Amino acid sequence: MTAEEVKYFTLDDIAEHNSVKSTWIVISHKVYDVTGFLEEHPGGEEVLREHAGGDATENFEDVGHSSDARAIAQQMFVGELHPDDREKVAKPSESLATPLEEQPSWWPNWLIPMAAAAIVTLMYRIYTAEAEM
Image (tube, rainbow, N blue to C red):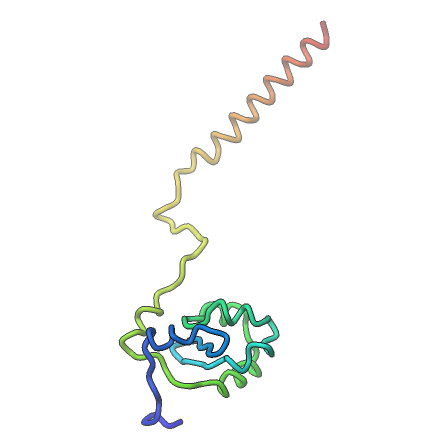
């Protein structure tokens, strides 16, 4: 496919391909029809179906697919995501890491364990004092 022949699909177009009969995914703004590959996918059909009709870029890159997998994907290439929709999928996904500005203050991280240690120590002293009597 040459640059002039590239077909562009909107997110709405791609979302319509969310079934076993027609499964499309987006990886790095490229649209792939993975319908015929569902049963052959080494990670299982569910992995592809989970992202059917949407963006799978992050998951595809996180797994670290081989160059062979990327070559297979090229055989399923049907077009590109329309430029107007690219910013909708370009934003990073939510991370489990807490940004610095949202981190809680340090004192609960120390106060709670210290209070628990003090209570355990106090209970131990009371128990050993009663045992000596």
